Length: 367
Image 1 (cartoon, rainbow, N blue to C red):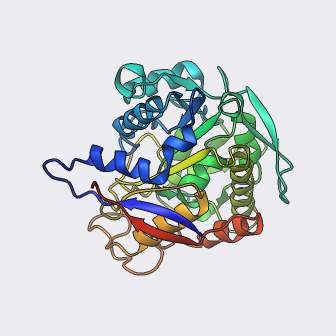
Image 2 (cartoon, rainbow, N blue to C red; image 1 turned 180 degrees about the vertical axis):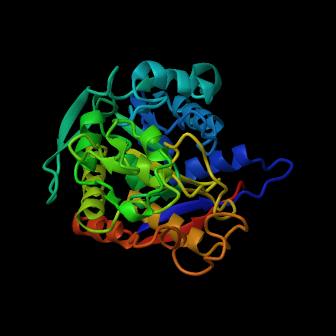
């Protein structure tokens, strides 16, 4: 059982959120993890262009300052996306990062795309799982001496929620790794519900969908399983269903996450930001109304316990009126929003891989 440190968002004169966040980092042991003189990767998600739910860059600035204070050298990093968008290659990715405040002048550390110009720079890390034997993890990330991971906790159309485990597994994978993760995750169609609106065609980054005879048709040989058509469809004609595809994705992400966590054994700190808890991933080029009010910031050296603690507190928080979770007042908020979703499978499978999700929650405050 590991400690999970939590700070609420109450603040006042002489007790700012910056002060509290610095105290959280100190209590969680970031100074000893960063060490002295090493290169420390600060893994972030800069947010897709048009999305405003991503973690504010000022938190990365505070992390970078803390790393510098112990004599180490921080750099901000993220991986390119499988889908086409504002982070599909390093040139566009750097532009989006700068637009959202993730660059030296504002965040106190340079932003370096972890898997190279086109997402093809990676190392293969061993995995003792049933889906993957070698995880394709971004090369620059693998070369770091320590890792501090900043994750925005929110919903996800295929995994139920996205937190530290998703950021470790999918967020650290190079583009070929992301393709491996999604290779079995193909959307299921319900043609009888299709109205040929064309939204899925416009949103498909692979050009795998066409409207034929007034129905959208997927070319599964071209489909990359990214789920954008599922998010775009308002009529239930595109669905990611529980079964081999979703189960495979969750298990592969867990295996990739284990590979990265083991690579940085004893040299990683994970932070969950349960702020602006949107129903969808920050990879979308928009963000919907948060489903619950801000819960706070959590930190731990145990990524699975961290996700468990964050999810437990979110599920105890009242749903916000007018959000996608409005009227779904009991149980797991993310399962309630996606029919058939089983978020527990991620925890079950991670435990089979040797991870532990038991925790002691310790609330901190500035002393």
